[in-house]
Length: 441
Image (cartoon, rainbow, N blue to C red):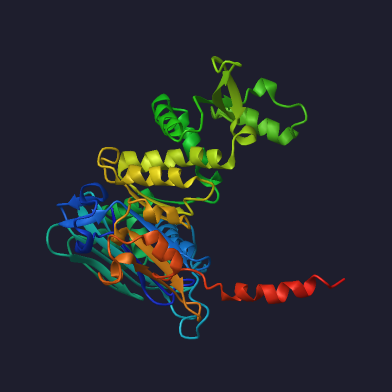
């Protein structure tokens, strides 16, 4: 499970910004049994969901992009780049203090009942520093610390890492962790494994994970679970069918090269290609009696919200079944607020989320604030000042006399009591500005 993620000097975040999934004692009597997992291995109470609010361009998506960058760089830095290649990191550009300074990332998580703390600093050309600690029992142990070309490693527990350093195999633009994992260092592989299981997806563009859902739908057991979610969402879908391409019926006007490639991959590699995804709906007569089942095309006949929710079912079921962490940028896009509430309630449920998967997402849907689904320590905000610097803070950061549990969080947020809303004073002057154009010809 994710405990903390911290970023500094990345895109719109000039100063350090930290998201905590460790439950506070401030809300200890609120939704404790549902929203909290008491991890006795690390003696911490951990949150199973968190939501981030903020005005447009306040840093909500950029914060998730920071975690996405960290994941990508950890997994790929040793294999997808060469010596001298530029690191695709973007510091805060609106200040001379930071535009040429390194960006910093750190994550704390539990994996296989052990707590890890891992982080690094990078600029466009080099890994400036890097560190890895773990806590197998009660004491945190340093496995390695890197300061430029200088490395300190644990004598017994990071021997393969020490060996790749000695052989000069760690490039200036690659992470020691990534290199050590390539040489089968057990602890490095544990960290890499956690990052691979950290799922980061976009709620604005479901094409990136729809294929994953389709691959699950091809398995009868997984298909049944997908159907259960679709039916629970009240979309009217009774069943789904994957229409696979028959190479004997390929269109005559299909480009020759494409046709030959499809035929080759189907015959030689036993691959299958989909021509359509069908959703099955009931058909009724004049007396509202069911008389038939009609096939709809998912792409041609279903709404954009239905298409998105179908694509989401795969990642949701995957993380719930395996206890992973799911990060969704703009979860509410195209979805009804009640449906978003139901998705959150799955993660908060003891019965449905038995492996304590986590859901972290951003949204503009203020209905969630009055849904009763969240504790104060699960509600986060991003706000940006006049210098373009974003900050991240929790509702639990406010003093108890400023935010009472009995208050309407939604109403207070809309009024601007917690910040993180746009300043729209310019609109007050539109009545004086716009009429000027009415008489212009």
